[in-house]
Amino acid sequence: MIPSKMLFALALALAPLPALPAWAQAPQAGQAPQAGQAAPAPVTIGDIVISGAFTRATLPHAPVGGGFFTLTNKGSVDDVLVSAQADFAGATQIHQMQMQGDVMKMSPLADGLVIPAGQSVTLAPGGYHLMFMGLKTPLVEGETVPVTLNFARAGSIRVTLAVAGTAADAPAEAMRHEEH
Image (spheres, rainbow, N blue to C red):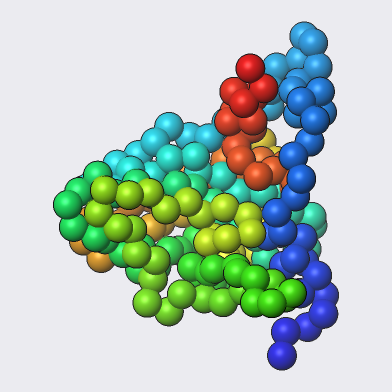
């Protein structure tokens, strides 16, 4: 049984939120965006390209957070994201969220997440995501955090996630590009 406080924090961390109007997303005139908010540059390991990596800022003492990015398999053979580790969390799991009737259900992917050959899979709020449980420290907007991703074929790679705002559905840089 999951305690109600943890369920509430989990819902806040992973719920898809409506996009803010452009005026609310863009920095004010003469004000630069905060350092570290833009998604880190895409990284490649084997046939897998990892892009748009971010997480959402958390409140102090929040027990959970989520990790989001796109995995593109440029190869001719499927690969699997089998696990992930983050030093800032007690445990990291690969999760999915899906509607079952009128109820949103979240569950870990015990066998990992398949990235089909020649296709992309996006981990985003409200869908597939990394679940950071037992956060050791808050995730602070404007900072970055390292996460290690382990693939069945491609191997392991350490990636950097930009910490975006608590309501972000994409890295801040991506939201600024969508305004134009």
